[in-house]
Length: 250
Image 1 (cartoon, helix red, strand yellow):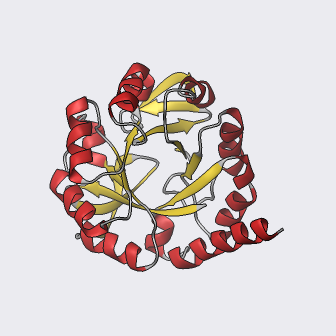
Image 2: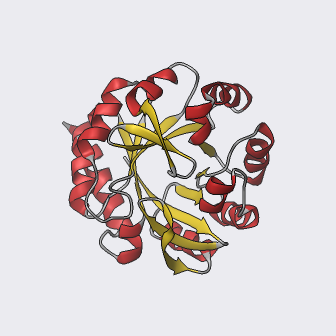
Image 3: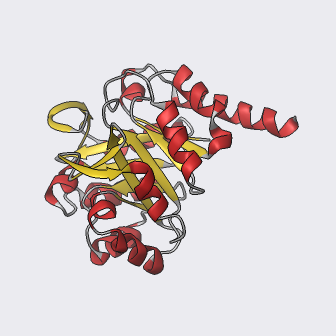
């Protein structure tokens, strides 16, 4: 199971929001490229980016920073979400070195857009399901929908989606623990690998997700906990690796 550090971009800087509220942000570093290099040095095998400005604007707003991070990461895959609403934007990101594009709002409002992207960019598309009480939110979490996360995930079962990032909005940035059961329940409902997000706070959260990895949980995105020091990235990845190796031995 991958432990994936998150870098949320706002005005070209690294911040974290609470429950997706743009007005409730914490600045962690003015140099996101340096942050990416830090996580790489600690053993990150993938980097998760969110263009927060882009999510609300509907188009990329931190393109140069994203490109610089991709250059710094070299062969380490980078995934990004926020404001990907056109084929041209997707193409630009792929050409900049992004490995995976995370589609959130349009996955809800225009699911056929995901189908099209999977055709144009096979093995590069991830669906981001940001949910509260089991229902998906869009527009940078500003709008609630009547679509359940599970039913939407099942809609993409056979179109070539590489993974689903499932975020419990009520937990995100709140340091209250990951919603393991909701994540595992979603994973049970589809064959697509699921990446947990939102509320991963301590190594006990990592352990809880590791225990459910057989249900299809392939990774965990960690944000505020890394920046506030309640999770050590290297220790978390080593914990996951040991569990996997132990399972293979037995």
